[in-house]
Amino acid sequence: MSSRARRLTATLGGLVAACVTVTFAFAGSAAAAPMYGAPNGITSITLTKSSADMKRIAEYWSPARLKQAMDNVPATPGNPPSSASPPSASPSSSGPSGSATPGSATAAAASGNGESSATTGGKNSTTSGKAAPVVKPTLPKKRVPSSGGSPVTVGKVFFRIGAKDYWCSASSVAAANRNLVATAGHCAYDAKSGSQAEYWIFIPGYDKGNTPYGIYVGHSLNLHEDFVGQGDYDYDYAFVTVHDGFRWKAGKTSGSYEMESVGSLEDNVGGQGLVTNRGTGLSTVAFGYPAAPHPDGYRPYDGQRLKWCDGRTIKVKAPTRLVEQGIALTCGFTNGASGGPWLISYSNGLGYLNGVNSFAWDVNTDRRFDRISSPYFIASTYVVYHWAATQQAPRT
Image (cartoon, rainbow, N blue to C red; front, side, top):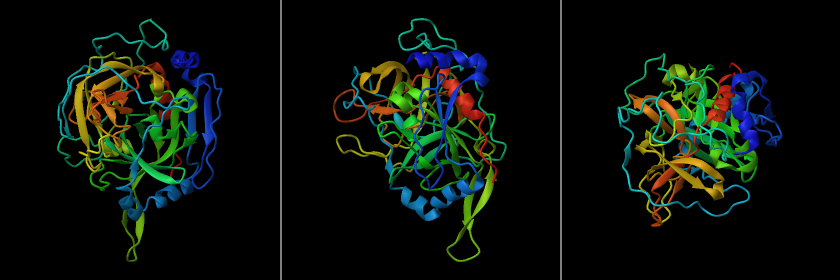
């Protein structure tokens, strides 16, 4: 963590005064190059400045393209520009994974501490960190059909980087604007090539191609500048402000479709809470849509249904991805699960976001992934969240 990150953490008492880097990349235009040097560096990339931009992105993701997107390539985290080797770590025991119906899977108190103390003063700090304010989860205002215990806040994001379409996992998060999504940083920005995602949409409750709660077009991508500028996976998270949702309905002529508004994301599915500096050893449930094969070619997932892993977090480091204070969970997820939420105090579909799926590990060196890791959420994570939670997309 850089000294700049420490300054970002210190701005919690004065968020309004924080200096924020803002760039623009409108649909159909060339990608804007992010600017660096903001002392309290949040990189905020605006994808839409009008309802016309929103509609252009929505029309890109036509029903036909969404159907094709089922076979798209999941986003794969690239190593930072100065690195080319995969991470390694000491072995850990195996744990379960399965379909996403854990019900009341964990009972770790969001206000409690884990087995290890947390730090926020930077990667070289030895002082105990102070947690940012707790964001409480919210229930949807609209009636939500039964989902068999799965969190309907979780879904897929689809986006384009360069000439290719990709997808990841993500979750709705409770926010003042009621339209906020949390995912991995590499599901919004490719640090290796310096390219941000475009044509970004979120589909909560995604199941085998269905869009039961609507489609939400991304308005702004909000990331920690050390991920954008350095590819530092200690900050591999993004908070994306989205427009009110819509669904495709049959048009007046055969084969045509029309957009039908469904309202805000949080009204439809609710939002997960958010906590920081909770230490390790916490009972955690990780969700996502894994799809890619393991390194040995074995492919247990197809990316069409939500999956989960649970266990207790441990500390990890991955120097090739600049990770010095990561957390990890025993899990066999593959690419496609990136960006899915790590929830503590999870019960009946809601909990507290304490991390996101970042990248997979083959700890046992048997060419099968057996661990996933997440950036450790600290006070600066809350600062990025808070900035994103105040952004308002143009009304359609």
